[in-house]
Image (cartoon, rainbow, N blue to C red; front, side, top):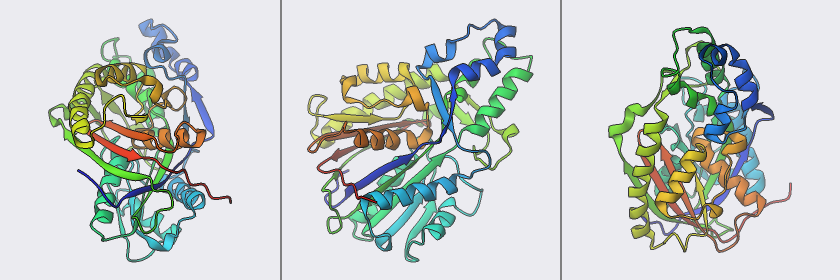
Length: 357
């Protein structure tokens, strides 16, 4: 897929203040560790994740999404009256219905003539939202769009710790599918897309590719929606981490061949990459298979954990803010999500826009 009239005007994120270290988690898991004689430090050693963050108790995803989009408008100086689509795209949402996007739209006071809905695609939610709204802009149906999401991990973390400490039937073998749940972190990110008439950055979304390998859909499953307002006791996720690692990287390798054909880019001509953040084993294998230089990638999993659908845009926002991205860079957004789905997008970055507030 190719675009001629879609621009990435801004990417921003907000991180929770409360930090939960991996060491703290393992101390809370002492009953499990002692019963199964597991070595302390194992979780950080396996994943490279030393800490993750959580939102305050009781805060709904939509509450934080409103703040994040307001920050996006402040940074870009964009006219919210010209927004033609608002998509809330995280795994977490406020309620089963209505769409979380509805309340976010109301509180942001966006136009009535606006596409407003949620979409869900595991860790690829925001990238899926970017594709959907980019198509609307390219078709000339809207002038600009906001894609936002907020992931909240407290309930999943608490229910997982409770299960592991209280279920004495768990063995060294059966505990493995639960460990991925302890890597999940919280965060919020938003992206503003515009057409050529409105852009002040000329940051072109050139296009990209998608690839589905749905035979592996059962490798990671969450029993219920992981929402801040839900009942934590029922929120559990089972993940075959090893199988998901290899199946995901295999799918990414196939997609990357298509991506190179579609864009004409090569590993050498790509200047910066932003990827879904899982852990050190995933990063190592992915960059080896794609023949990409890890030094071109911006890593966040060590201090944020896996923040689901907002992981990739958060890494991009922090990388841009830190000066990691330079004018003229060719940026590859490399998203892999359970399902398994892959979305890879090419962005030609020309100018970082910041408005004094």
